[in-house]
Length: 182
Length: 122
Image 1 (tube, rainbow over the protein chains, first blue to last red):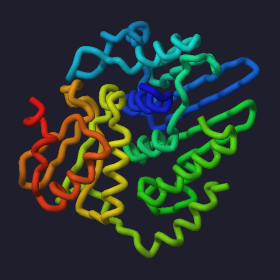
Image 2 (cartoon, chains in turn brown, cyan):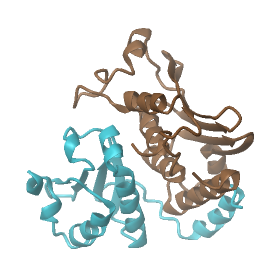
Image 3 (spheres, each protein chain N blue to C red):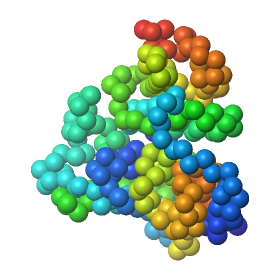
Image 4 (tube, chains in turn orange, blue):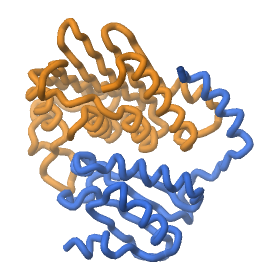
């Protein structure tokens, strides 16, 4: 993957497969700490302690079509290559939180990339889920909650092309305001 | 600066033209593989391109959806097209620039774009 937004998309699908009804994506940048932290929190089925221990192993996967699962290992590698850390917390019946930190100015830290597309793609995948995207840059915060968006649009489906386009615009403009892109 | 408040205005505008038929019955289904392999290979722009062009051309008989691992990861991005009454067609090594041809020739005119299919790739 060449953008963090693609890793975020990938990991969020795990949350969807786990039956989550609420998926929260938090991206926090702090110049003073030279840190970029990505957290993906879900309220899905969670993992048993045994499975959790092997979750970041490429030969651990829940899918049947292949015997490798590279999503989590790739994300872990991306974090470690950029001088960061990787952690998964999970509790059966409660949910899972995947956290990856990156050296903000590290030469191998990939850009955050196209979050509007990632959020739109997730909404298209499962419009019933409440997706929350929160981006914080040195304390300045932007937050999008699809539950709030649904209140504004009433009975228009959130995955209508016009609504998705507007949500994309909202994310794009607000992110630009926070930090001029990247 | 756009905010959620603009959605309320959009709702007014769209109330008139609401097409409530959201199911996929009888529709041509375009299914894009979005597993890790697909995402890494560039499936997100392919999905978005299909969604955008179907919308632009007002193809109300086409639904675009996502799926997980299809099992032939080295050929990702993969797009499966299900036309009611016909066999499934599997397009492999997809990219956004191939999307308009598939829409025009296959989805609109019923002609499979053979050179993009899995048959041609093997």
